[in-house]
Image 1 (cartoon, rainbow, N blue to C red):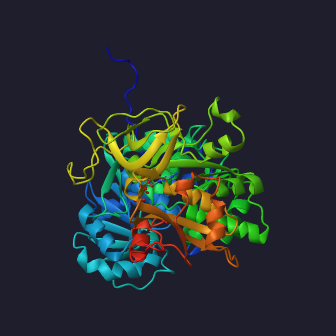
Image 2: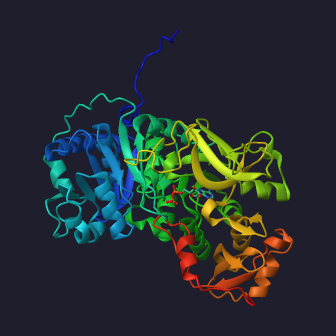
Length: 544
Ligand code: ADP
């Protein structure tokens, strides 16, 4: 027997309608290339989204059109998110920091019909426009006054197009399984793979991520997504923030400028933010140097790669900001687990508490996890056994776009192989040891590069640290620590190695240290161990 409840689809249109009607006066503030502080309300935003939907019709964007964006975090990008998806099309956010060959591959693989592009990225697109024949034209995210001159074919000005339309548009009724967004993984191995989100998965992820033990979002929050809107939809914040009616504050091109971020936080009343550790580091360094406060910020979601304990402590002890350590991936929309205490873990103290903080947390309802050994046998949740982390859930992808099972990560029994190696403790908290491809195997045992990096980052003289496995004649592989020292710091190899004593098992202590002036990062701001291994391909441990 079925229940007798209304069968209304879970669509992003519902969020938009809710936001417009119930939080119509809430503010959205943006930094853009043509305005240092653009400010308007939800009501104006969604009125413009309706005009934009008419623009898409007028441009002839087809029913299932993939419409690409290469854009910063700002109000125009937000309008695109909703107008594209809620008119039944697919919002394809492209990471403009990728190599040109990767952008071309992605645009062609997705067969994007239109590309909406921030002026800053126009020169990049000009280089490759000829190689993307499916693209019918380009819309530059600018007003007429600040339009750059361009060789892009069929190029229009965003504001001019919008001005020519009325906001009289009826959003179509959509099936909740209809595709709404497309994001490609960064493709550190092989070509990028497309993850095709639908309305249902996006709506459910927004609910899951706003729960009190996730990001705990509310209508009284000011939300500053530092994570780019081209990096897994800014982790869903443009949806969850609108869903709860929070103020949105967008940093635009100033995303990596700690001075502007600090000003936005303090002046615009930002209470919650989110970003990868590499962008949070300069923010912390800036406020320390300038002796500024981060109030009213009270929590920051950090994920994408492991958040070092030292960073969590700095936020907590100097700024009363709680770090919400989260783990996920593009294939998971992206949020999978969040570190929020349970009734049992909240009473932990001292070392146990510190260790617990470094965990990537427990699954959000809607996500299931397990770890298995090489024979696909499930391992116990004892905090010790570590194996391949697999997931399934309401917002986990079941296949890659146009790869039809060839992605290799989806198992026949419905689990997705994340490519991460983890242990799970009895409270259900995961601890990511490594990405499977980064695991260091020394004498047949695994060493966690993440734990070693975390320990190195705890040293007051270390700015950034990476650990990779290097071949060793006796032990097969041994860890090599590669570090960037803080400006002026002069710490030497032996002192640094001594720092590890008593903090990790003796045989985990890195074999050697290499000092560098900077570490390579991926297009999403994470450490690129692939690139680092290439740079150190000729490195040999002393005496080997
Ligand atoms: P890519 O890094 O390829 O751009 P994603 O952004 O989807 O793709 O990254 C997902 C991966 O990032 C995860 O599989 C995991 O290895 C890593 N990751 C994400 N969050 C964390 C975290 N909190 N701690 C450690 N690793 C993390």
